[in-house]
Length: 228
Image 1: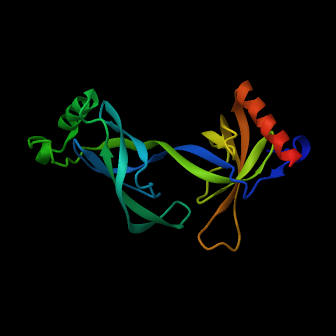
Image 2: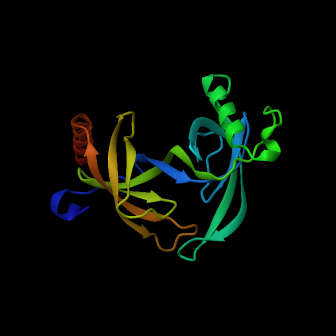
Image 3: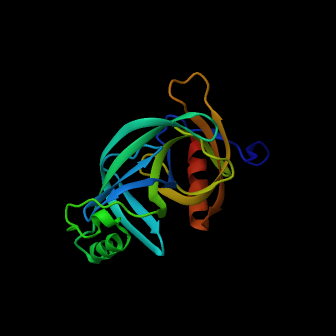
């Protein structure tokens, strides 16, 4: 994001401007039942927040939404860079088990459960799924403070490092009920902020895909900031 040539950056830190970023992160599925599932992952999930769990197993794929009802730090591990990272476990309570989705879930568990749990009553039984290829948490919105903004992009503060050049679906939320815009953003930089207790990062975002209507809203907000 080369804003020095194209756009003037405006400092908005402390002005209640926020950005939401849609993540899809891979997790380890520990157990699953008709009522919910337990997973482990390297990031915290927010208590009471809703997520979508997508499970790919054998020739089957199943997804359902649920709310995090418990979460705890259980251990630490080393990542590919040799850095120490936390391991969390979380419990997700499914929302739609009384609908057609619940019937679909029963069929999924019966087809993929380990032999020791396959013949048990599903209600209240937590089954171990055989060899899931991939399990992901999607619809995983995280809220970040915006520090600087321009017509070309923005600088946000994140609590973890994000790989450069990855693109995310995002939402920019203006203060004082001035609305919000949605767009696709590309990570252009991610630098650790020095002299901070827990690690935080200055992360640059380029606006790469935005509707004409939202582009006009952004221009109006920039004009509003310049008049202040």
